[in-house]
Image (cartoon, rainbow, N blue to C red; front, side):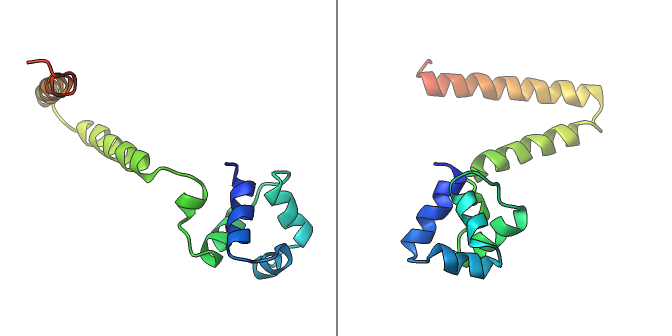
Length: 112
């Protein structure tokens, strides 16, 4: 579902008119209509206010999968931490990761 459609659906589920939501957001009703129809993109400030008004998480509003973000943050942390290691330590980590990967494949493919 597109962002504008999602905003409209949430607004309607809360029985809030476009006029009322526009007033809460301090924007023109026509601008809100353009957002809901996908003709305009809301600013980050407007998105934040919409999430606050509807009491929902901004990631939920934007359909951002936080599990993916958390995984990527962990990968970035590992990569950044490895930059200061000596070559022999990096080789050791590569071996550990290789063994873990092999075990993961075995477990997930039922190979003994």
